[in-house]
Image (cartoon, rainbow, N blue to C red; front, side):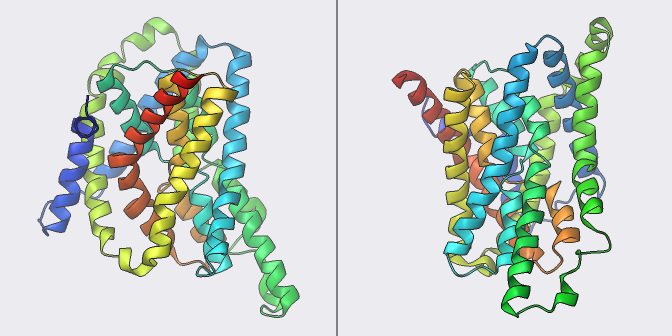
Length: 336
């Protein structure tokens, strides 16, 4: 199958339709709450599937996957921060907020990757579903630590008054951490996974029409809305500039390669599982992290991290990144 035909799956085409509709200034709009409903459905569905797999999973293997998910969630923001600072074009607090997005994950990108593997007939391990839930929060914590370190350096250098160095927003570190770990998407994903793990298997089969039969249709609607949103932010690309725009492409490739190495060598996953770990490493959050950064680092410019995560990295991964990561996973499996 050619690289072009890899893009001809309904989910990706609906994303392209939404993007195109926004570019031509169509009056196509989603009802305000529909996007939230679709997000809730997708998180619940993937969580239930992950929980059902977890119920039959090897506990030791699941624990190893969780550990490596934590490693990725802690390491990738540091790499992103270092790259942004090296450009000398990004303020340190902006760099901390942006970096936090690139250590967290995008459920939409992950779901698109599952759809992609399904069209290829590629099987995959279910442990990446657990990793998806785990990786939402660690990057937020790293972003907070980077911002705190930046503020202390600013105070030491005299560019910030000590009185200004208090905790950001209306709460302290405890409040920010609570926001990170009780974020609605995290609660839904983890809670649904627990339900899928402990519920009666026969009772869960009755949910198949809800969690399986309509899943791809709901994903297409979700990506149509995401295409509209990405198209809306496409005009902001000039604001982030070529250097930041380049970061929005280069950073997912770096994260994807690290994810490939972790999935193949550290976790021993198949091509499908390795592809999904690569997607986790490559994606950037646009749901859980932005509100946390808005509260934690109010000095940072939201248009920068929102435009990068949703307007640059998300469409890049959906259209080009996922086929690239899968191809690399195939090559890696053939070499070893």
